Amino acid sequence: MVDSWLSDIYRIHRRRLHRLIVGLDVEWRPSFNHNIENPVATLQLCVGRRCLIFQLIYATHFPNSLIEFLSDEDFTFVRVGVESDVEKLLDDYDLKVGNVVDLCGLAVDWLGNRDLKNAGLNGLARAVLGLKVHKPRHVTLSSWRSTEVER
Image 1 (spheres, rainbow, N blue to C red):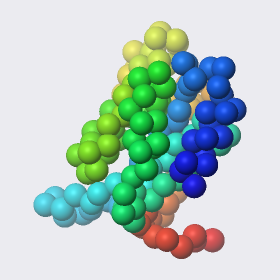
Image 2 (cartoon, rainbow, N blue to C red):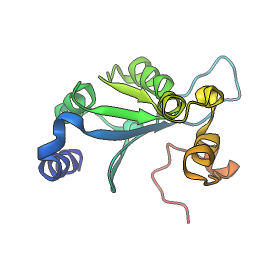
Image 3 (tube, one colour):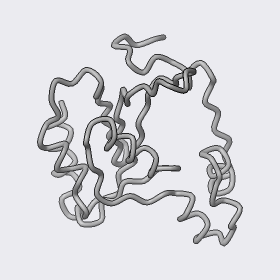
């Protein structure tokens, strides 16, 4: 699935690969014990409307194509607070992400509002798009290791 998704991305975006923007997110089950840090369970990548959700926690290996994609300096991986996700990927799985940009920094530069430097996703969406984002607590605290889809 990873190779197929990547193949589609390379084919669809072949003329703009040198400036490809990739949304990146990782999820892991929060730990309420300060001595235990749960590993990243899922890696989520989105380019346009095409998204890949890869359950790292169950992978016996990582495809070379994914390792190369993540480390490609021509691609820009974006997210609010992306540095912490990239650090967790490196710490948990030795996966390196080449070029990252935090969306809060872009918003500060674009809107000239220094208060957005530490904004969360909701604050950023409200300031930039005029939208309110609501992520229910049961989603935030869900079992990201699960192999079953909850309805």
